[in-house]
Each structure stands twice: as structure tokens, then as C-alpha cells.
Amino acid sequence: MTTSVQPGTLDPRPAGEWRGVDLGTRTVSYTERDAILYALAVGAPATDLELVLEDRLRVLPTFALTLAQWAPDALGSQGGFDTLRSVHGSQHMRVRKALPRNGELTMSATVAEVWDKGAAAVFDIRVESDYFEATWSIFAPGSGGFGGDRGPAKQPAPQGEPNRSLVASTFETQAALYRLLGDHHHIHIDPEAAAEIGQPRPIMHGLCTLAAATLPLAAAVGAHPADLVELSGRFAAPAFPGDQLAVDAWDEAPGAMAFEVRSAQASVISGGHAVFG
Image 1 (cartoon, rainbow, N blue to C red):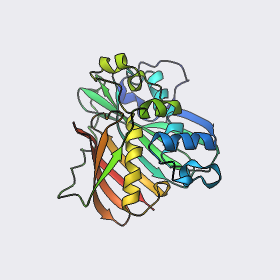
Image 2: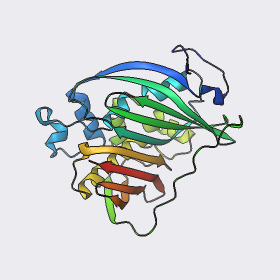
Image 3: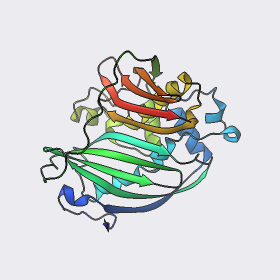
Image 4: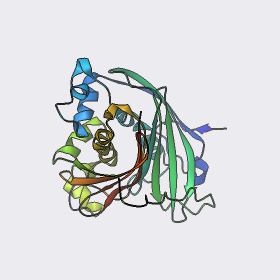
């Protein structure tokens, strides 16, 4: 059985009691321009006309995650977690069918699980539509200790040398461009906001970095990035606009890879998994 909270209201319930809460249903519209802007913001080259030209357009599946960002935002605004202290811990997505070039997406969202990590809680927010299902895992310091299950263990790192060593190049204006798609958090544009979280300058959006990694991964297996059918990864550390990111991939099956993304300073995405159909 699920419960619901009215949008815009604060609910002080303990973290564990958010499990099963219905976050509502929303219909979001978009145009070809939005999908093209997204492709450019995650690093698509202007030469890939299937990503940047209206009459040939294939919409990147990860574009749907920008349209569904309202769901974790809704839980934060209703008091589920402290939006100033909590971070996006990991992301999972499974594609059901290709997004149309333009139109409307009707999505429903629930708090699927709340895991008790002791000093913190992890909220799994699931969004579903006819086109995809996706889960945001939000790490919320100070919300644990409610006696719940700790949840699944972290995926072990791939063993052995990677089958492929790739590069995902980011650019200096990338976070400024990506934020136009709806994630307006100041840490991605304002140096003062970035300094408040201990960063020397504005950081990349985690979902932008994750999507950017799918471009060289797709090319490595001879797929188009719009052929993505499943994607997941844990955000281990921030990347910065302009970073040259190393993408190491381990083949698991035809079109399926485990992967890790590294900057010169740190592991950026760990436990990555991508499947192209």
C-alpha cells in the first residue's frame, strides 16, 4: 500500500517511513530542439546528424532522465531529505522503447526503498513511463539510524585489465549548457556555491558525465548511442568541465560492458554497466 503527500507541503516523517510513498504523476512535453540541445550538452558531435538534425533525429534515451528530474526534486521539497546536504549517489535506467522526436511523457514516481546506512539513509526513487524505468539513489547524511535494512552491497570492481580504454572529452562550457535542461543547482555554475561544498570550481552534473560516457562506449561496440537499452553507475567523485575522462570497459556479453570513468584526480563513476541493443 502506498501513501502520498501533497506537492509543496513539508512532511517531517522519519526516513524509513517514506518507503512506498507515491510522489505523483506528471506529464512533461518536449520538442526536437530540447532533444538536440541535450545531445550537444552531453558531448554529441555536430557531425552525428541523427542526434542534431530534426528530420533525422534519434533521441538519446538518457534525455528522459532530464524530463524526470521532478521526481527526486519532489521528495526533497516535501521534506524527505535535506536538499543542501544530500547527494545523487547512483543512477539506473532501463529503456522500454525509443523516445519519439517530440511529444509528451507521462511519468509516475514512488519512493521504492529507503536503506539505512547508519549515519545516512539512501532513498531509491523510481520513475516509470511507457518509454523507460529509472531509479535515482539519493544519499542523505544524518537520516539513517532508523533500524532499517542496509540494502545491497556495493558492486565489486571489474577484475583484470579492461578490454577497452576509451576517452570522453568534456568542454569548459558543458555544465553551463547542461543546466539549461532543468538542473539549475548553483554548484554547477557558481564558484561560490561550489566552494561551499569543498570544490575548487563548479562541477559537472553527474547525469551529464554518465551520459557523456555512453558516447565512446557505443562507438567501441559499433552501436549508435541511441541504441542504449540499459545504463547504471555510481557517482564516486565530481568531474569538472574541460576534464579529459578515461573510460575503461570490460566486455560482459555482445553489446554489454562494465565500465569505470576516471579523471586525472579520481574515480568519477564506478560500478558502471551499459547495454546497447
